Image 1 (cartoon, rainbow, N blue to C red):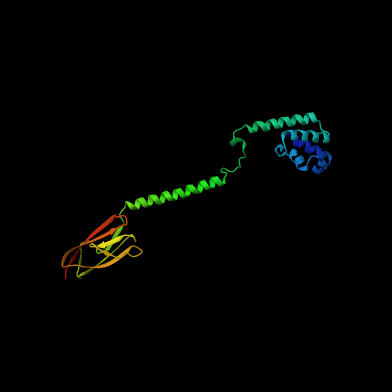
Image 2: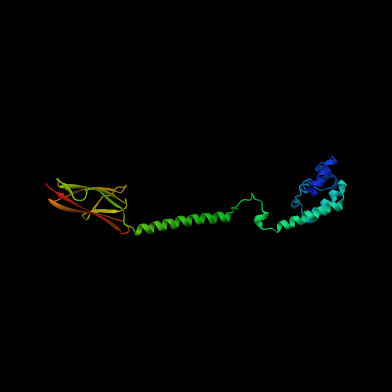
Amino acid sequence: MKTVGSMLQEARIAKGLSPIDVERAIKIREKYIIAIEANDFGRLPSPSYAKGFVRNYAEYLGLPTDAIMAFFRRQMTDVSKASLLPKGVSDPLNAPFVHLTPGRFVGFLVSILLIIFLFYLGNQYFRIGKAPPLTVTSPTDQQIVTSSRVVVEGKSDADATVTINGISTIVRDDGRFYEQVAVEPGVNKITISATSRFGKTSTEVREVGYQP
């Protein structure tokens, strides 16, 4: 389709002129000559300047100025109509979906920090209301032994307080504990408790029979 820019460019090339030749002749800067030929009138100082530049350029090349200006007015009208279209229609399809600004970046960072804080808060609240885990691997319930001392062994939270028959025992960094407990002939009840720093307690009971 013929445009103002293509007609002016064809006429210039036919005369063997370069954009710099046109600049010297009619005192319109070369970058504006190139913009007019590319129909990129937005790069010109203003619409009134664009109109005057196109008219002078057409007269210099010996083209019918009335016809050229009619084409120019039609093109400018089409541009104005396009500017009234919805933004999503008139914008280039390859425009970025999200335009990251410093304000948006700060807002995004604050949102991430808030989510992390809420997650931490929820986790702490959950831990406050939950008793610590307690696993007793030795002795087994209703185990029969022939020694007067029984090994009590298991695992809980590293920061829990573990007691065996009411007596505290050492809990290692990995949460494991180990203790030897004296038993009497007959059935002995061994109570193992793990208490969190929030006061929640888990308890396991083992009955051990001692036969000397």
